Image (cartoon, rainbow over all chains, first blue to last red; front, side, top):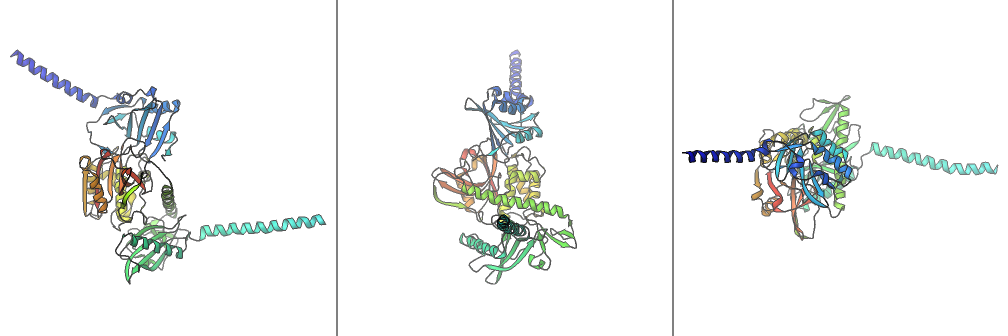
Length: 143
Length: 391
């Protein structure tokens, strides 16, 4: 009898832990920097691609990079329950360290992100920040 | 005395030069404001070349070597300058369609509309040839007006709506910019070499394109323009809705299918498609395709004759090839990392394909400019979904 009880408790505990492991990323907001796993302070090149007009902007100046990434410093994201594939994005952000591409992210729109093959919803990222990306940098057609 | 004569000799030719220069300036100003950039004869010749190209390319069976202008109607901008010619055609004595050639353009006349049957009908339902007694005013993109007294009336669905002249001017200016930018963009794209979105390698076999893409007035709308017209932030990722709008535009402009846009307006249709296709920070696979179906099911929209959808696992090269061979424009949703710098799903309108020594390429409109001359290198694993509706 005791053994059965223990078995049931263990099973419930396992289910709860598994559910917790699955649910926590969906419920708890984390800084975007942590989710990408990329240390923003080490980034030495950023390539931004605009999904709405095809223009591209490359940042190599450290001050410019820091200013750009500061837009995302306080952005926190959590995984969406709905992971269906979708088409369309505002900006794709590719990050580089010592000439090698590291994990970046894609801005789908205000509060929508895609990184590491998953969709996320975020806070502290609104249309003003999107507009700032558009107006603050030197965009070119990629020829 | 000698000095005075010397001064006269010097001043006289200068005066003559000054008079000549000022006359030239006045003439140039008159030309710029009073006359169209292309006269009727030029436009007729241009239309004949267009008809010949269309016949030679197999774009129609309704026109042939006997197709010629039956009557020509001039349209005017609000200041009274000729800005387009509507050329109704006949073939062997039968009415056989029309060509609308805009002449406010800078580099060449722009054939913005054509049809293979009947004659040109303005959006209010009236035949353009019957508007002959009054001046027909035109502001681009199927917007016609008539004047009564000092007031302008819209010839859209009826002729009772008075339109502010400044509004017409603003609209016309915007349309002129779009058309001129489009012509420049297509010209500059065709002269550039080796872009990431251009065809690479040596072409093997014959490239295949759906009919009439290069001919006539097919200018896909770019996303930023459509976003702005719908009141969205310009940087919204609405590519699938823009692609759907351009698919309708293709069938309308290049295949002569009418009744595809709400009130005939692509911009208004795009705005509606945002909700039909449930746009929210992108568009879900399949939901976009289903939304387009719901839009087409509207009573005021011409029903499609067929449609199909393939998700990533079911798309292959033969599906794309077969449908382009069957003259269907495809919504081709794929990762754009191999096309431009950027990781993200993007919707292209596929209008052709070809094989080269570098691989298989799909000719696409990318919804980022007015061009139909971009190429996407086909990589199966990059494709998310492909769908189409046909009429």
